Image (tube, rainbow over all chains, first blue to last red; front, side):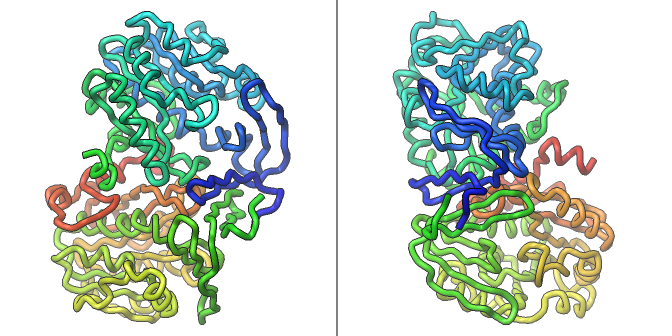
Length: 281
Length: 281
């Protein structure tokens, strides 16, 4: 049994829980959209919790933010215009802006309070918020993509919460169809796609919706993410073009620091577990 | 807060805890060596706990058992004689015996009660216990290796608990030196080596001890393991020979079923995260 010295996220659907030992609660508020909490943990730095789910910790967020950004950016031949739907903690934005070829990165999160809290409690994730290429919007990402003109963007990163609550509409064919229309010829959308151990149903539905949205090529990448259910997470890329190759030489000479990602890890993240291969054969 | 409906393993050293929702406790006993518990969980099948640490669940043990066995067996050119030190739940033994070239697999676990409980609560892991090539011994693995004649074995798999209690001596140079002497020319020892996110100190010390034991080539493999701390686990191979190549064609045509492992996953498991590469450069 764990007492009040721990913050626990219990996931009823999988019968698993992950907990971090906390030293104190730093903040809580009900924003217009979500219930936001910030804890100071004993060994993971600060922790942001949204509607009871662990979102980001100081210590282990590098896995997620790097793997949501660098594989897709090194897969596209020449990404200049990037949109981040969600991503209010600004960690994905920081990784995207490490790529010198990116000319514009627009972060569209419906909840401005997430970003305002990240600026206070996760300042290192926000260190590129004032980059002249960064544009932070606090509006509805679904509407933003729907209203976009064709060929507006090269990469759309859907850095969302789980497919319940405000993020539900981000896992639907209508949204992917709008992404398809907004993307350029070689455009790619990538979305966090839960745990292949616990959430194969969500993964399968999401891949079906992506195909219903018009995308012919899908590629799921796998990576560790300690604070998310099962500790093993995934992201799925969808494109009009082949996704099995990437700019290996550029990744090998990336010229910026990462903690987890490198050229070998990129290749490794594409390997499909045997059960996953069978499920999507 | 989690109540008595959950079994939690809280790891003080990392300030993390992992929990499974349980429906009932099936068994508990103090063996000569350890405190053993078996739970029925809501969604992970049965769970074995040793001295408070989650050891094996029905649902997710395939990651660990496959990754402790197949990478090392497909790295050695022609493994015939395999020893498993620890491994009392018999899951590693089952994977090893999937290789038709293996002529003898000796499992040496000090605690016979672990195997007797596995036979009752994890019968699928014990399905090869009566294979004529299997030899189950319930004696001290450290002494077994120390007393072995040179060139007695091709592969030693150290499938142990954490480096505290009965397993502590399995992480020391003296033990690795004895492994070195017992192994054949192309011989390889592989040992579970904890989480690279949480336990880099143990990993570093273990690699140092392996080198002090005489091994010149080391290779760490990485894989998901939901019920172990951080959900991201590793095993480290040590040999007198190069470990960077493996029998890819044989792995691609393995001719037996696995859930996680395949040729691509083998390659992927060798990729070193950026921080790991820097730590061991």
